[in-house]
Length: 311
Image (cartoon, rainbow, N blue to C red; front, side, top):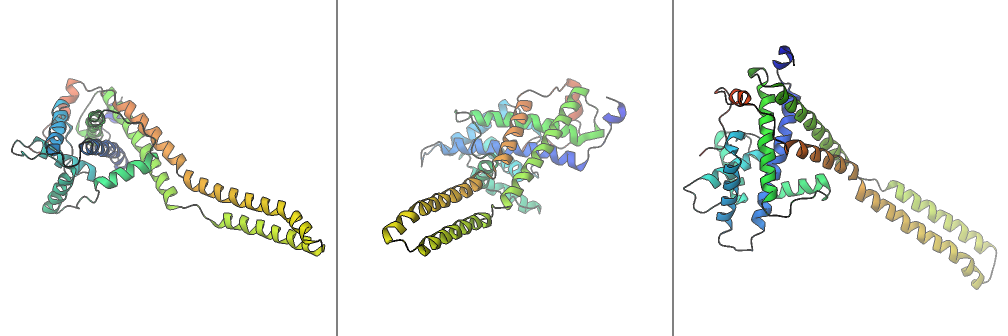
């Protein structure tokens, strides 16, 4: 890599793409924590305490204070930072619920005069289902998804920092290449999300279905009229019309079925693309980024953002 390439400042699109990946796994960490929380029986007295302990365990084990999550970042990032603060607070004997973490994130934004997070956990659940069509395979163990998501989040945040620092830091060529690859995948993620949003906003029209239905009825009506003009007795009239009526009913059923299938599958291509880019991202982030000691020192430079959630 040439010195000129090393010193290149990141574009806004690159920063947004890297942030999209961080947000993806911040949201999945919240969903994993939600699944862990919801696994407790209703009214379990230690649910909040055990939820806090589980998040605190993985946070410390994965050294997520070094991930430098942004308490003013995306909605998912802000809620996760608030949840970590609650889980790690030694004076918090009650524990953690995601509802309380969301409220804390809103309160902090309000006090700081920032735009308040508008995303609730229910929104994250719906977005996850809509994005992947309910066809993403998740770990069976309650906290395995949480550990995976937090690990991927930590690694994505390192690569995001490499992109964000741009010319301010010199890092090794393999780390810079890994960060550039994350940006490319993040741009794919953005494009695929946009494609899904367009498909969601463009419903399947019923007009072609109604046109086919009207055409089939017209053909049945014309045939029935021609049969009646023959002056055949009633029994013969019914006998001649029965196959046409049966065909009309079959065509009507197929017409409705084809429309319902088109509605049900209109999002499939975009969801398949999102599943594909998510798989690529998880494969990338399941391997630690090639951070050397020199890279780590450069990224910990005092001019960078303060690390992790506040204690």
